[in-house]
Length: 183
Image (cartoon, rainbow, N blue to C red; front, side, top):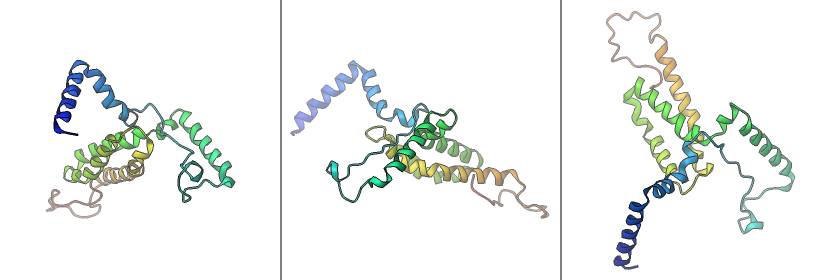
């Protein structure tokens, strides 16, 4: 496609955006709303594109495990409808809210360790740029969030107890002594 056609396309695109910015904003936010809102539960899909659907033989769903798959799906669906427990089934909790809370705790308690959150921020950013809301895009953060909670909990506990119990602290500069987890 010649550059002239691209220029014309982007001119129309920009003009339409100026005419109706709300539609552009909604189109930008809609694909990621499920990752941010504590409204909907994570998705559980009991399907894959196996050989019957034109996929590969490597991904199969053995018929003898059908009952277990059904039972697991029912347990998950019940959990997503049970108050309080359903919050634990939301992608947004693991993608946005737990990492944000851990970053805030770490930044307040030990700012020098906040660069450790760069991979987390980059991962969250990559997920938010995904083409649509689907739990599979957030799996890396769903697995990482409990580690972040442990990381921050260890830091909170280490800050709460005296650093050198039973040791004479006279002459020790607290700024140079650092033990325990970072946060």
